[in-house]
Structure formats: structure tokens, C-alpha cells
Amino acid sequence: MTSPDDYDHKGQLRLPVTFWIILLLQARTWLLFVMAGASRQQGSQLLELFYPDTRSFWIGMASGVPAAIGLLLTGYRQRLPRLWQSWRWVLCLDLLAMLLLQGLTLWCGDEAFSPLVLLFVLFDLLALGYVLFSQRLRHCFDRKLNGAE
Image (tube, rainbow, N blue to C red; front, side, top):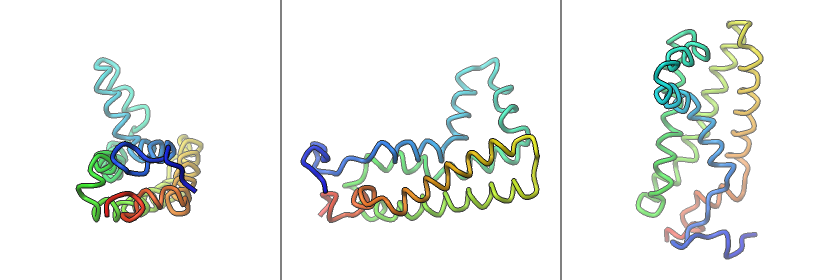
């Protein structure tokens, strides 16, 4: 059940804080890249610490693109309602792809990073469950309930 406080001044249902955290979780490689750029001298060392293999860095950058676009789309929910409505499913597919990649990494991969990968698998699994089953988030993506029509 929503209250009037759940809506912003445009009449849109406010996005839950958990959704913002999920977007940042999905765009974690982008965040690390920005942090590495901000700390110029230790930037390359920071990237090498988390991504010793450059291929995994680029995979992380590619898998973070839907979340980065999702962050931008939050401001255009009324202007691009069909795109916004479909973006929930794009985020679900991206989370599913990230889970599959991390599962493949655990199955074939490096033993040194397995606890970190397991942690991200857990977070991504929780995020996927939230995006799929949260009624409040579903209402935020619904055009009729979000003030777009």
C-alpha cells in the first residue's frame, strides 16, 4: 500500500533505496574505474588488485552498461515510459548473465578470488530476487501506477 509521501512532486512513485543500491552493485566495475581515475597514482594498482586479468575488467564494464543506462533513465521515466517499463527486464537479464559468468568463474577459475566471487554471487542473487519480486519496485516500473498515463 502506498501513501502520498511515496510520490515525488512530479507524481511519480519514488524509487526505493534498495533499487539504487542494486544499480550501484551492477555498475561496480564502473565505480571502481571512476575511483581509480580519481586516485591517479594508485589507480592502476587498484584496478590490478580487483581485476588482474584485463579481460574480466572489460566483461565487468560491459555488464555494468545496463545499470549505468538505468541510472540515467531514472530521470526520464515520464518522457520514455515504454523504455523505462522494459528496463526492469533488461536489468533482470543483466543480473542473470552476471550470475552465470560468476558461476563459470567459480567453476573454472582462480581459487584466490573465490570468496569475493561467492559474495558477489550472493548479492547478485538477492538483487535478482528483489528486482523480480518486489511489488513496490514493480509499481515503479508500471506506467499506469507511476503517473505516466
